[in-house]
Length: 118
Image (cartoon, rainbow, N blue to C red; front, side, top):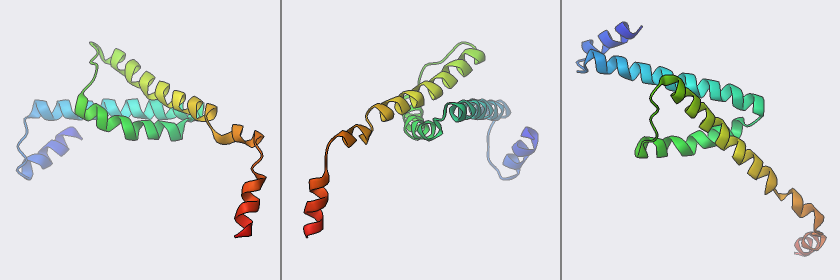
């Protein structure tokens, strides 16, 4: 598959070295695996919405600022999956803590009465 894609690049006069191309494909594969594993764990934890919010906010920051680089691939997977799970879980906990459910204890009937007069 990689060779077919690389030959298509060559046919279309896209000049890229074979080792650079192979490295890019391996990084892309690793990122896909990390996101897929994180998505499965997010589904189990019921934080899929927060997971996508985290990715939407985190990917641009990560692309522009870089980040921590582990020495081994397994450590990289562990750190990446942990951050992709930890932050959405914290977002979920904070959303539940600061939701508007606690406002139910207040009586807002006067607002409905005021709005219906107009």
